[in-house]
Image (cartoon, rainbow, N blue to C red; front, side, top):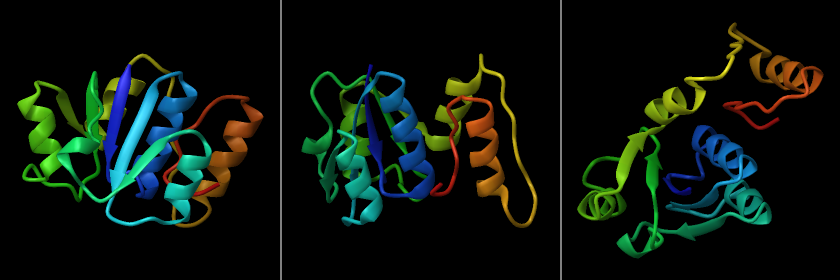
Length: 133
């Protein structure tokens, strides 16, 4: 499956993009500026475009996932819908991805990301963590 992420430089979206790449999908994305997060994605073989442009959506794209800050008027969202590509908000994509999986959630005031990373390591599984770990 070919998946394009709009707002890929955000911490939540970048984690989801890495997970999908790790799961064997072809992943691309765009963001308004280059950061250390976008560079890490590029280092992992993900094509990242800086700036939003309809041309960023690859030919043969199956799904577009966007962060909460991206509006329906975004040029990439408009282009995806015009091409008949499914467009999902990050939370809805997570629901689809995790529907058939066993899910563990960590909550609290401090230490959630560290605890989640430790649990993922102990359980030898993959994890979607809304922070750098």
